[in-house]
Length: 64
Image 1 (cartoon, rainbow, N blue to C red):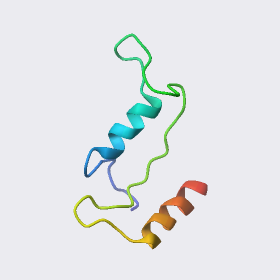
Image 2: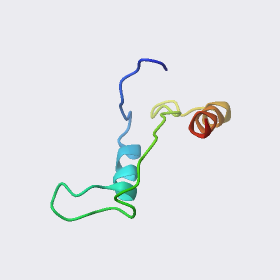
Image 3: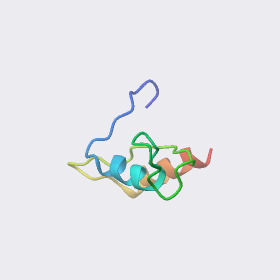
Image 4: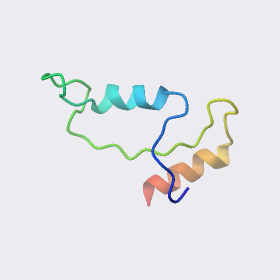
């Protein structure tokens, strides 16, 4: 959604992103690829789930 603020409705995405590209705020790098960048899109609602169409739209957005 244009103009929406970054958020994670269930913290799962935040946890996964940190595992992959965690930084070095603690003075020690964490994550598998700490210098990588993340492009995140929330396509599933933590309470209601979502549809295949929503997931495909998120993939299309990421590719563009």
